[in-house]
Length: 81
Image (cartoon, rainbow, N blue to C red; front, side):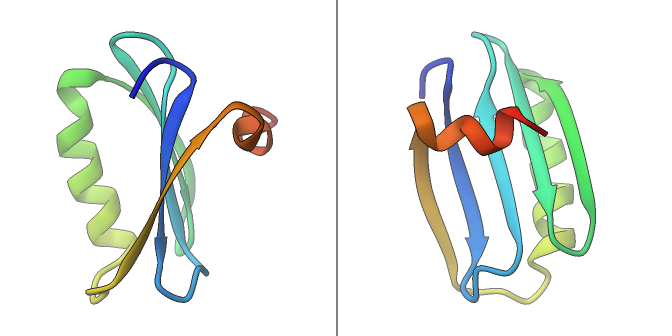
């Protein structure tokens, strides 16, 4: 995943999401929309710890998740946040 690309993780019902966008070579933006509405910007070394916390909060009992690769124009809604 290069800079300007991301992954959208959604619940099976698509009512909650966690979006991970690579901002630069070593920085990521994590956008949480669901039970909580928050944004984080972290270094690569702190990404795993943050994702564990956010995914456990947003998808506590979910066994089925949807993953989408996003890039280009698909990122426009997230840049306005």
